[in-house]
Image (cartoon, rainbow, N blue to C red; front, top):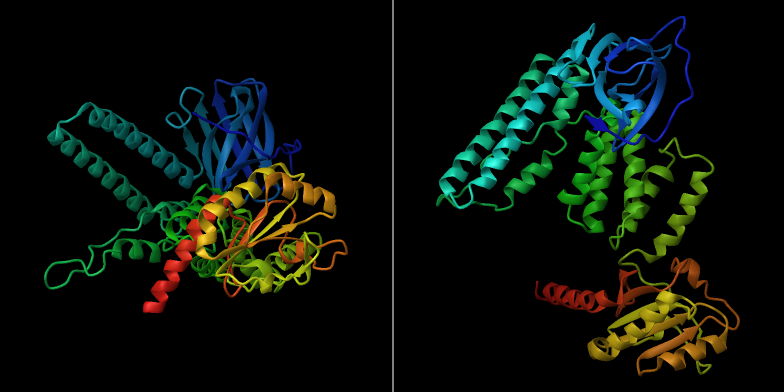
Length: 481
């Protein structure tokens, strides 16, 4: 029995329409005189698209004059706590289903739709395999230290998995070309061959299984079939790929994002292209991983600013352009924009690029910020304890315009040290530091190398030393190559 929270409810629709493109007759023994919903998966979410009333005998009809989009749909019973069971919507959209509340899947009878009959048989088979797997798991736990018994159970689990895969292959073969076959293909696992070996029987490449799996990861996805979007499968695969299969750095993510979006673009289905592009744009914009905003910018420039993202309207585009313009100057590897003629606390002038150090920590703060009150003194402690010896300087920029407030904070927290430069953009602002460094909250920390290239951004104080030591080691390795 499945329950879920649904995100969108529709207005009641009329039951009687002249030309019905879809007509799904439902009989559910165990409920009567209440509403039921027709919904569908859309990635990880679920949406309701139609509603009807079930009569005193458990009969109801969903119908409409426009064909439903393909996908895995849900018959939802709000009177049973939003319990639902799944059906398949494909080419044949006129059929009937009878079941009961005791066991929706086991007691289901389908008439007029072969694909739904096959889908129901598949669900029953998977439930049976899952039940046997759970029993084997219990036996495995009970085996304790008995390695022979655990080996026997593990072999049975492997056989059970083989049975599952063979069944899926059989259904795919017998129903070739159907929407359900595409769904099962999308679930199909990549079979990794044995790693190539040299003349001594040693593996030539220990990473062969990973490389093979990654290179064939998308083999069974039909990028021209947007019905896969109305299942949980495609979005899950997309997320897993970028979370687990790709090296988590921008330089690796960027070509991978380009490649998968291009697959959907060339697949010819506009909705698949729209979903994938929008999903990845949001994924990289909202990520907390340092440097992923460069991937966001790349997607925006390649697909949105070029005009290919046809769905982006006049409300969205100006906001996107503004974000791209703010992020672009601060991408990792860029030379940090110089902040010229910044005034020090003792009324001298200093520019960011004048700081002579192997590494420069650029920190933006304001004394009234609760987080700043903790992080800036913490940065000073870290500077005195471990950063100063690494030939690091601090360029600490006060973001407000009350000099007395600023001086009081510096005095109270004892923020004075050789190599620690306290500066501000007052009393006559001119540097546009908020635009150049995307400052919309504080504190914000950037790490610059000797050339003033950005090697770290928006990181915590506790991460600065590790980042600098990593960069030093990377430079040493490059010098020895």
